Length: 143
Image (tube, rainbow, N blue to C red; front, side):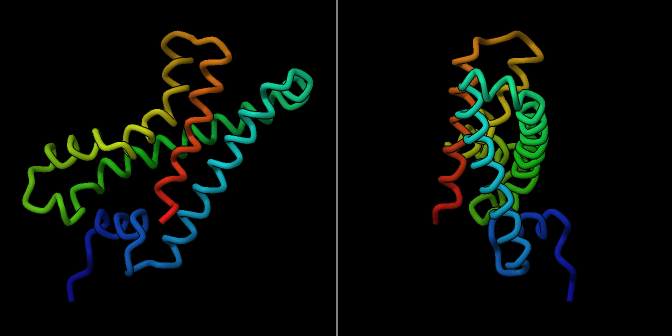
């Protein structure tokens, strides 16, 4: 029996397939936890006293989150060609089709704070709002 490709195996874990159900649940639980930690940090970070006290911790949470969410976004772009609806489609078209879906747009918004910090800046309220939008990532795991 042929062994599935690495991309197909990653697809199975990320999309909750039947080949790796335990890994898939761990992956989902880890992302849900990270999203909730992020939302909590965004909310508590708006309280000046808490923000000053836990500034370094909030910075680490943000750095780890951006890294994980960016890797997840790139991985989903890579594996989307394995989706049954993408079969027979050129890879570039399948990736473009995925990139404009609501869940992919939400995933991109989740990593947007990094680009805002690197390429410009935004006021605190805008950054908090963008970070709170990470809560919408939970929609993927509600089924």
